[in-house]
Length: 251
Image (cartoon, rainbow, N blue to C red; front, top):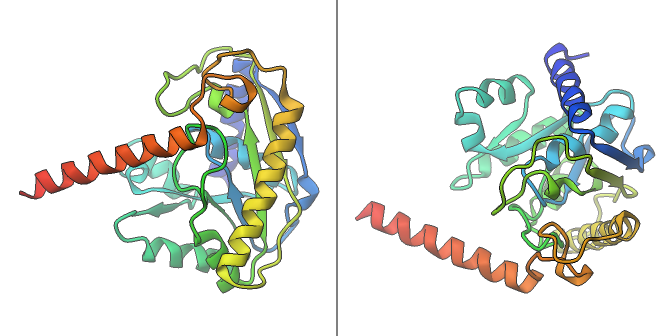
C-alpha cells in the first residue's frame, strides 16, 4: 500500500461522488494482477488519466505510473503530488530520459500509463499513434494493455470550459485483451491502434443516445466535434503557430 497514492484515490472518489458521475468499468481481468504492463490510453480530455487507473486499482489495488508533460511537474502545487505518486515527467524537447525511466519502471514490474496519440484528440476519435508505447513494450518485455476512456471529454477537454459541477455524466472505461510484445515496432503499433479503435467503437456504441450538436459528441454520431481530418488540420495549425513563436523568441 502506498499511503499518498491511496489518499489521492480516496479524494478522487469523493470528488466523483460529489459530481454524481456514473461509472461503467469493463475488462478489469485484462490488467495483470502483478508484473509489468504498458497501459496505453486514448486521450480525449485533461482528466482521462484519473479514470483510466480505475481498472488497475480494482485489480488488486494496483497503481499506474503515468507519463505526463514536464509542465505539470513544474506547478508548485501539482508538481510535488505528481512526484510523490512516482509519475514520469516528459520533456517533449528531450524525451530520452523519460522514456528510459518508463522502461526502468516496467522492468521493475510497474504499470506505466502512456498516451500513444501524444496530445488530446479534438475529434474524440483515435489519431495516429507515436511508436513509444510499442518500443517500451518490446524493450521491457511487458505486454501492452489497450485502455479506452469514454465520456471524460464532457467534463474538461481542449477548447472548452471545465464542467466540474454535479454533471451526472457517465464515464466508461474499457480494457481490451493484452497484446504480447512481438514483431516490429510498426507492427505492434498497428495492432495496438486496431485494438483501441475496436474498443473505442464498442464503448461509443454502448454509451448513447447522443444529443445532436453537442460539443463532446463525435461528428460521425451527429455531434458538434470536428471530424478527425478537421481536428488534424487544427493541430497542424497550432504546431505551426508554436514553432513560429519559438523562432520569434529566439530572435
